[in-house]
Image 1: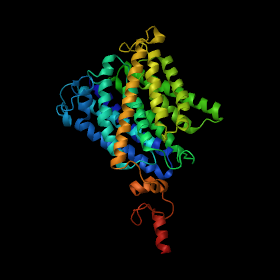
Image 2: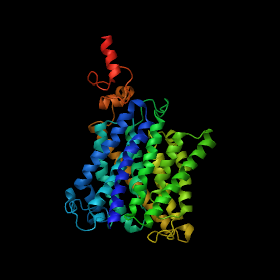
Image 3: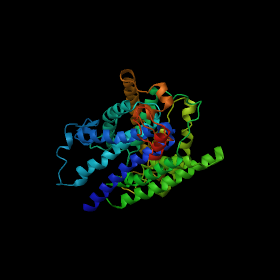
Length: 429
């Protein structure tokens, strides 16, 4: 038991690191005038969802089942009855810690879709409401005792439906209400710092081993299978994305490599403990190829998903969840199922499709409604002027990069200015 507890606590820490990793991954992809806001949206999700999870989120996800739709929110208010060293820690405070990190990063994932234009206060209000109305209940559907998706027999080891389809669909619903960035798609909006993107992808990959292998809830062979499949599929996805780039564009890019890594991680998440090596390779390769194609859909369909949350997380989550209906096998995990390619019938595939579609529709609709309510009450977007000047200055009175003696609007004299630049200013005056 002690070994399992140690592994789960370590995994929880790894999963928390994924959100700062996501912040750098997203932060490098936005323009320099928006990078602090992007970092703040991700870190804001940590603070906000962390508090809500401890107050009532864990209870809504894992409390006593109510009609297969919700855990009783009053069972563990303020973690009542869980903050005790007695009993199995993986079913108490340690479980609370591990699952908190999943809730946090799911909300943070949505932020990439609304980069450059959403008010920070409106983002926090949206994130808190969406977590309460969507993530906490959906986590119960998938993983809670009595949740209807779990009871139906759907396979989701670490969050294909609850995390990635959920967040990707919410991103789509929100951007449809929020509208396009000023100048999109006429003006080029290239990543301002590709090393940040690569660093973020590396941190995500590192933390994802806790995300997937930690979901075994034991330091055992299933954790090892999930770990190896996470590596396998991600490598295949990166190569698949780069191959498509090379064929289509003539170049294999660093942005493509980082994006392929994330696409593979997303797709293997629901499947990592239910497939063999061939299944992991297939899921990774298909995800890398299809997600690379899917990121272009926003230009064809006209929705401004700033950092391709829909193309990578929604599509990648769908790939992994649905392909389980073809490549799942009990040869690696008796708690899984034999899918079409391993002698099973179409039942597994049908179950996977139903779970994916229902979560996708529910999340997108609720996100759109929340976005609409926020838009007509407190306002969802910064002004056109503030967006043009830069959301970092408008929302946080800071800039990520100080050149010479430039100051952000609302920053007091000398704040954020290097000592050398300050001395130069004093000399000139």
